[in-house]
Structures are given as C-alpha cells and as structure tokens.
Amino acid sequence: MENSDLLRDLFRVFDKKFGKLGNQELFCCKLTISQCRTILEIGIANELSLIDLAELLSVDKSTMSRNINKLVDLGLVDRIIDSTNRRYVKIKLSSQGIEVFNRINLIFE
Image 1 (spheres, rainbow, N blue to C red):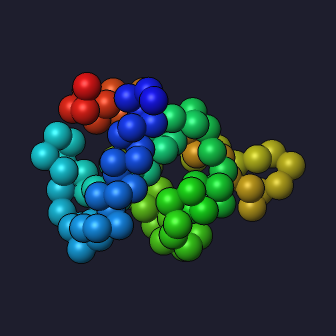
Image 2 (cartoon, rainbow, N blue to C red):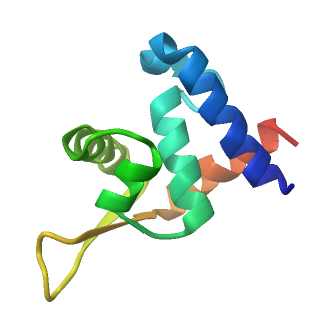
C-alpha cells in the first residue's frame, strides 16, 4: 500500500471515529481536518468533479461546495467550470494547494 493510500485510509478512520474534531485545525497547515481530507483526495485524484468529491468524502453537495469555496478563498484549490455544462465543476489543487498536499503527506512518511 502506498503512503497516499494509507494516509487516505487513516483519515477516513480518524474522521469517522473523531468527527467532532472536524472543525479543529490540523497542526501542520492551520486547516480543519475536513479541509485536509479534501485536499488529500483532490491531490490523490489530481482532478475531480465536485459531485464525485462529495460522494468520495460522504458529504452532501452543498457541504462540499461550501468547503471548496473556503479552499478557493485560501488559494489552495482551483474551480474549473466546464465550458459545455456550467453546472459541472472540476476541482484541482492550485500550486499552493499542492504544497499543502505534500506537507500533509510528509507527516505520515
């Protein structure tokens, strides 16, 4: 199992068992655990639709959209709107988001 796969599984277990901590900051990045999980999943996939990301993280679309809005405001995520279907949104890490993704991965090496 690769480090990124292991990290993803650990975050899922952690999030399920300690969901109440979701609004607390993770010490490495000053982000919530939910935001770190979101960055991790986007980084692993490289690019995801908002709908696929919400399903992957087991949250509803409106919650995912609010989470992504915060990450966009922080400059960590880029939102790409499909030119043929404006309702279809792709999510990708910005260069700053990739740096945070790499920092999260370093913690678990």
